[in-house]
Length: 213
Image 1 (cartoon, rainbow, N blue to C red):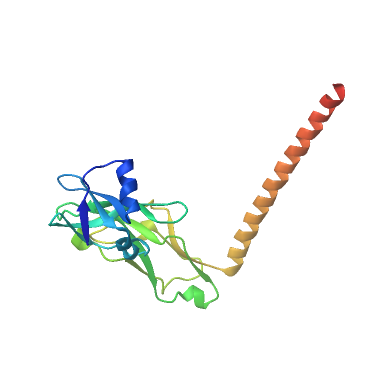
Image 2: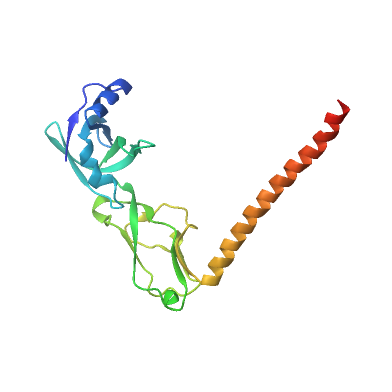
């Protein structure tokens, strides 16, 4: 993909860039930061997908291997407003969030349980040549009650950076799920009742004051 160097940087310039159908961007991680613009349409295949891409950017005749580090979207239209690219340096480890893909049919699901995936991406650190396209988890041996957390993930050349106790995937009994939903509903109702009682209490204490006036 290609980008064009930005002659000036600032809010006014960024507004002009967007009006022309381009996105202001910055690339860092190398010897210096480079501000540039890209065609807005080029982002469709990069950001509206769970996949992570190695993007070879050509700016002012020079090519840079990069990954998208952060994207800012318009709160209403979801148009890309700004993008940060991280230059890939072979000698430096990268931090990137990789999509999680489940494979196999869990034993617990066959027995009537339900497979629940809590994490769609995992943050990892590793060298560019060791980073896979996605994190694959085989759930075939998972029975009802089994779960996999970040601390259970093992890879010789990758470091998992998410909180170790975070749940990635679990197989739960249907009854257990219903109980959890009922508990959440009861907590919500208790909170609403408490708010109503508090409002009634305030009305009761305010009434005598109105009479005394």
